[in-house]
Amino acid sequence: MASPFDFSRLTLFAGVCATVAMALYLALYWDSNPPTSLLSRRDADRIDLYADQVHVTKYDASGKLVQQFWATSMHRFPERGNTQLSEPKLLSAGKDALGKDGELWNTTAAVGTLIGDEEIQLNQHVVVTDQAKTIRLDTEALRYFPDRQQASTDVAVRLSRFDDVTTAVGMRVDMNRRRIELLHQVQSIYVQPQQ
Image (cartoon, rainbow, N blue to C red; front, side, top):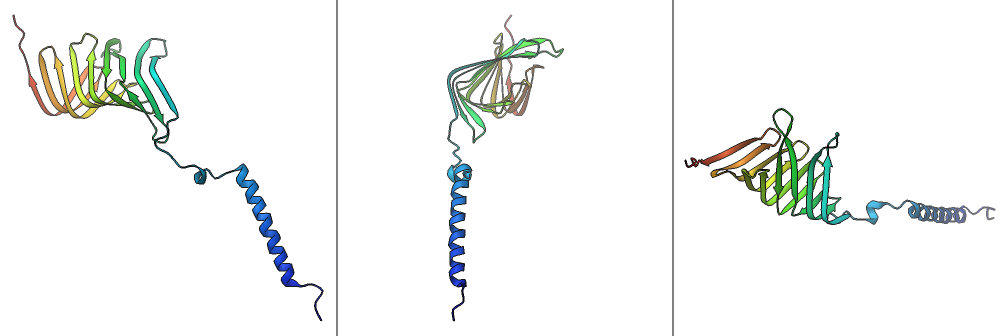
């Protein structure tokens, strides 16, 4: 005699109901909370901000002009954590040894990379001059920290002051204190002024 309950059919029915319920739950949950790691790839070349003819002016807490920045174009890459700059130009007001307003420094390059808010990496034909254009520094790569008014490089540099020329490999600069430290292979040519 057959039992009133057929457990094999009941098990099959319960399995089908559980599968349908799970599929509905996943469909509804997936629709409202899609897993972004599966739906979108990280794209290091994705630009989320683009600007032409950029001009930024920065003031200190007292409202005094500290720095101006220009670039012909700017591309921000969020996955890389940097912003690429075309033809960056910086005009920075340094301080002297007593903390008073000092020189204005003009820095230009062919390309640059803004890393966060604290560092600008300048590359290709980097030139730094003082306001009076008595000091000129030429190099192919320079890491510049605008808030600290400091810069450094590990590559060849050429420092010109009037007719004097000094070359070296590697350098550290503190624009506030007007201090330039040349690190390796330093060679100088001093031209005595004509009387």
